[in-house]
Image (tube, rainbow, N blue to C red; front, side, top):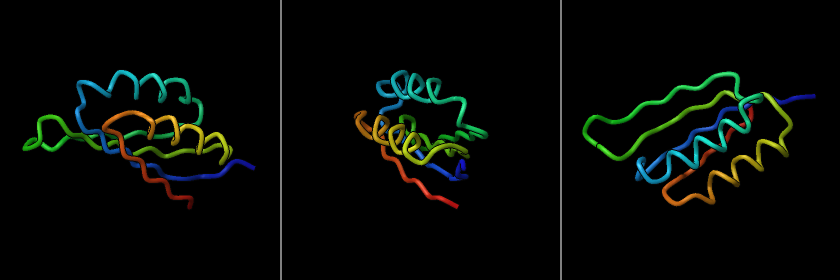
Length: 80
């Protein structure tokens, strides 16, 4: 059974890390059922993305690990 979960991704140094992060998200697009991204107008180079996910927990963890391996990316994941 697929699991429903929420992942938050803090992106520091957006101009450097965003392209690689986007590649990972695109590769896993079939498990992303919702995405919301914001940036703090007072913080030019930082952003926050929230993902609603439905998929196998091992695959979700692999995606989180891939994202965490990028410089300037912090990931939190919560299964609901």
